[in-house]
Image (cartoon, rainbow, N blue to C red; front, side, top):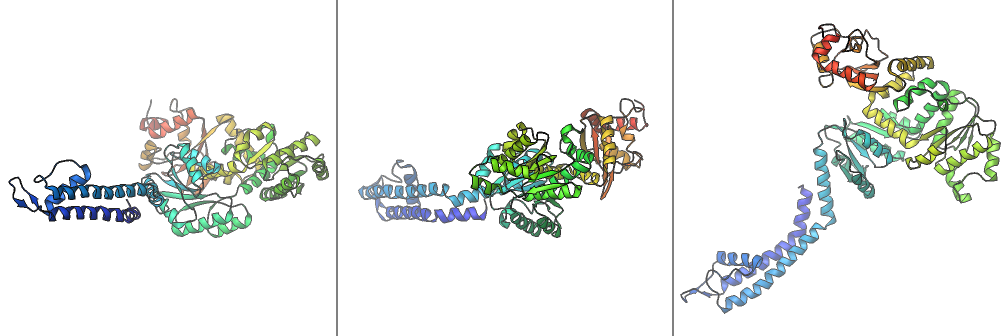
Length: 550
């Protein structure tokens, strides 16, 4: 129990304690002053201890007899008075305790103390997530309990209630509190050694900026993952030396750019987020004129992507809120709207992107464009995950869900750092290089390969670490040998090797391994299980290295 709780209890129970003490004192004093008679008829004076003993059991249990001798009338009259007098004191005290239990300040202090203890007892690295919504819920679902734990702060008690009802396992400590308050960040564990970082993905850039500043001041070593929705804000965060700034609109802009100019690089990136490693017909971004409906943050980001790709476009300034207010509807498509689409050249265009902040308007814009030009390629911004089924049923060629993009990017950065690094390195290559990689991965590991990340240490590669400590020269090629027949190769590809700050994209198979190397491996589960078995089993490793026979 912390000092705040003790202080609240003492403050609220001070008067009831005094009342009980006074009623007891008066009752005891009366019994001491009133002369009694012993069993032989001799007068006696009750001692303070006798009086205290009698009042103690009288006040609490009433009816245990008269001690040390039978009372005379004067004593019984006083005891009768004392019974009612002390009961009043007890009732007052019990009422005060009930009132104290319901006291909002005490409940808050107890809740704070419980939250603080929950955070203290986390023994894994953890992230503090500020704000609970569909984005952070998606991050918690995938992150919590694997390599990390999470702690959540949100100033809305209803959202914290929603989180509690989700019944996450392991439990997610959550508390109602202002994320911009230093005290709350300290309670959430920002100073704990195992606090890996803080995630602030609020819509308001100013709030994110304030949180980033406070967090950096409180803990310079903290990994701060923050959202920025404008170039100005992005530069501001970079000036603060924040390396992990997530801008969903910038991600969309780059995906459109690579989708048009380097589809295989786009494919490799999307594969890292769960797309099958094959370009489908609908994945091919069309050439020709693009129409962008909406000149907000996403519209401007798409515009940058198209300009970089050298694609002709026209952008329509469209305020969704003003449209709804003026026409009192969220359905796009009256005569004026159709005329507007024709003026923009919808019949001659190859693609239209609905990028307003209203999902229903986005759907109806694309629907009307399809009516005028059935062959037009359609892209839509989906603002909330709740409408996913409606968008999927509309057969839109590309759907950009801002929330999902942000959640995926954040999760990949935390839980799949090598995949995140691979995307950055692949963007430095050209599309021909990416096409070769895609074909190679398909040939060796199939059309839908999986990827795994591992670090060569005692926990993940026990046998391999022992061999490396003894000075053995082991190459990547050695680890591709099958434990069933060392002359055959496992169906795995080493996509990336990270050694300290050095990154090797598609490392040479003759490269010698070192303890601490991090590997991004492409394979299926069966072959990766074999790989794990080999690097952890001394006999299997010696066999594939040719040191022993099986």
